[in-house]
Image (cartoon, rainbow, N blue to C red):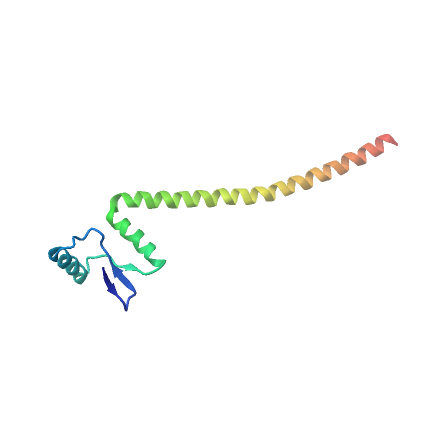
Length: 111
């Protein structure tokens, strides 16, 4: 594990062999800038997602588009639900007016 304190990031590869050659290769990848840094705290999760996107590049585009489509679909369904409730209120008002007219007609017929 290598820490970069000024940038608040660290480099960690769990599959590095604990030998002099494995450690020197890891330090060399960090020095070359080819190792992926992780941020500390919550932002480390975002770095993990970006790294997974790079590792599985051709397929990760499909996964990302699927998630975007799912979010758009859920937002569209929520919009339909909210606007559907507004339409139901208008139908309730129309029904109440209809019932008032019907009661008035029944009063006229009974007189």
